[in-house]
Length: 224
Length: 298
Image (cartoon, rainbow over all chains, first blue to last red; front, side, top):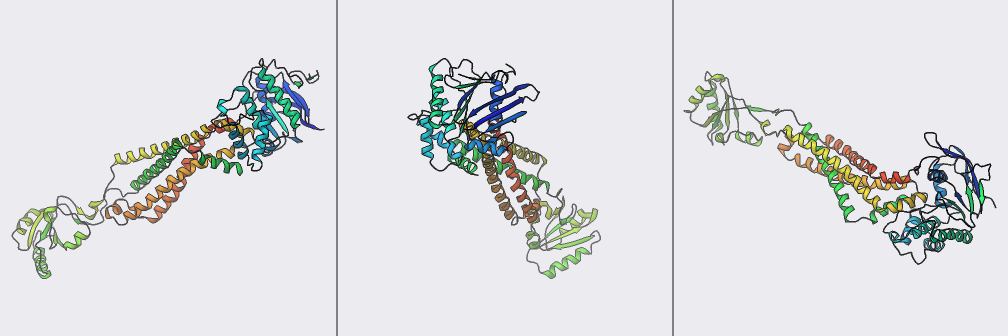
């Protein structure tokens, strides 16, 4: 079992040379689920930017699905996002489309022509939105929106899923439900899931926690 | 190419009355912009002043209308007798059909079916005029108050009109650009929920921008096409209309018309490109990297 994602000595500075990410290292094996915690909002945004290939890091390597995204072209990074790496943002902009229409829109835009309905059904099952497929996305509550974000990331069956922790109240059952959903998806699909959060106070029971706020030589990786 | 094709189809599929109205507005204003521009070109290429090609009677010369149904011998005899008068410097005969055919506009009180003498008597015109009254074969006489020429039919555009057309050209160009921007923005507004999905799905922003700008370019090109049709219709009409042919000589110049048509065939799409380019700002915004919102080291 190899590393599905391995970030080594990653550093990112602003244009004013202010450090945002310094010497960050972490990794997840294939089929593993982990959450990066202890980030500021800026660090979270910077990490997502470099993991998605929207920004180049100032230093370090990012191996994802056997490719170093720091050294590959922008086109290849986009191609990876189309097939190998899914990203579920913390919030989605809702529209007058229904849940199923939104999923279909994404697949058709990606040029997918085969097994559309099977893929959509699978994503609805994984995100536990089955039965709500005909709801308009603007009628969804925050948890359901987070589930739709997840469904959109899963619908083209990626190998690695990057999840930006949704903006749902961490004190409610909704967050537990969401984390449970991620664990079930990880178990059922065997998909590697990396969560990223700047929200303090979350309870990640059974999920590997990676605290990058601590220096790499002082047990930077915590597993609960 | 699949995402581009999909997005292009979506633009058509999701057309509603409001967006169709905007699109037609883009077509109409592009057409009006080019029409004003053509007019401006034709005004600019107009000969300066009246520039008459042929003067038939100078100011102060005597116009003599002959009685109708006179034989050529009678006219010749009359011609020779007047020619001999001392104050007469020169005398010219114009047959009535010749002047009518060339649309020389003589004063209405001097019309004749028998032809005209134009007499140059220098400063003695009144004396000659008095003598002519008693000559048989002369129907009426007149001293020309101004030059009478074929060039009198030229229509000169007043400078205020040129100013109005110039202002209209600029206004329609701005409105066409703004409407294209608005049309594209209204399409994107409908997709505001889908843009992030497309971005995170790995679709490059160019795959969205190309069909959107392409739609803007298509609308303005259609408007430009209508403008080119109008240009050729006007050119054909001018070739059969004496006043238009003289007043706007460039309108019957095939090379000029072809050049203008090709040039406007490029200008129309440029307007669409500019307006579309402004309209896709939301796409650029979504595809930009996330901003680092809070202070560093927070």
